[in-house]
Structures are given as structure tokens and as C-alpha cells.
Length: 255
Image (tube, rainbow, N blue to C red; front, side):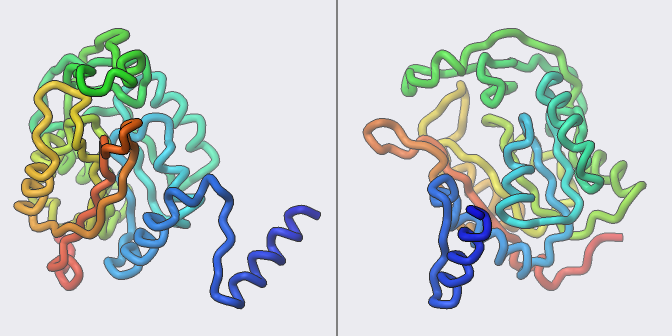
């Protein structure tokens, strides 16, 4: 009965130009609306989720944005990957890959944090944000061999055509290193999303505006910024930064 009432209320509101949302969707509503439009304008055929953790973004893309095409989640932390693998069993278009990405193939030490979502190749820096200190603490380190994204895409396209890509990056300060491994495949990326930091959680993070400048050098232009979280004093800590490649709109895909 409750579901019927909700459906009826939503339909009535839509007739009068309104949208009814549960409270938990309000914060992401503008980003959801933007991505739906972006996926349509840029003919996005595949979403690649780098730094997938336990699949939060995958669920967001499926349940809120409504994207039903190929979804590839890439995650290096073993226990997070095992959770992804279990959840993906019910979705035939959801591919999960246990890997860490970077500019080159090399062995690197990876910090698994107490809060797995904060795990990173970088060292934690909690001086400015002490409220993150408990979760942003190294619980253990593991040795990982990084892969280049262009090589992984070639491997994946041996089994299916990916088409134009929406690339989501959330590697806790390592996004630009992942981009260095894109190579000529950048022409296939119609748009990207990167979590960029205004207040640093890790040692050696470049300023957020320099990160945007670096993405622009790959041919991307700023499409929107959405705050992810703020301090108690309402300073922005991180943005979800969405960028598009306008020339990609009419460009032919590489063979």
C-alpha cells in the first residue's frame, strides 16, 4: 500500500512540474540530473569506476543515475574486492577487477587504512582534519603491482566493445597518476569524475586548482563541482569534479 501511495504521489507531483525525493537523495539530486544529461549528450556507453571500494558508486550509477550498460569496477584492497565480486554476481554487465592503476607497471607499497575507503598509495596527513584521524590511519601495508589503464582497457575490449567511457576516479590522491596511464585511450573517454581535495588528507597532494589544470591538459573542460564533505566550520574538504571533452562529442572512436 505504501509503495502504491508513493507512486501515485510522485505521478501527481510530476504532472505539476515537481519531483518528490526521499531525504537521503536530496544531497546528490543535482549531480544525478547532471550525469543523466551528460550520458545522453556524450553518448556514454561504459562506466569505469577506479577505486571502487565496496561498490558505492556502482550502486549510485545503477539505482540513481539509471545507467544500465557495462560497468567496470576496479579495486585493489582484497577484502573490498571480495565484497564487489559477491555483489556483482547478480548483474551480468558489472565486471569487477582486482587491480591498482598507475602511470607505469611497478611494485608499490599500498596503505590499507582503518577506514578502507581512505586507503591510498599516499601517506595520511591528519593535521588539518583531525576528525578523520581514526579512519585515516594505516592499519597494514600490502605490496601491489600497478597496471596502466590503457593496457587494461585493451584487455577488456578483447571480450566486448566498450564505446565511449565515463571514467570515475577516486584513488585518494592518486587520480593524476592513473591518468598518466591512459595514453592514447584518452580519446575514448568522453567525460570523467575525480574527487579532488581542497583540504589535504594525504602528504604531497597538489592544490585542487592545479589538479583541474592538469586534467585540462588532457583536453577536458570543467562541467561541474559538487562538495563531498565539509568541516564543522563549513569549509569544503573535497569536491566531486566532473569534466568533459567537448571535441569527443563529434570525434570518431579509435579502432
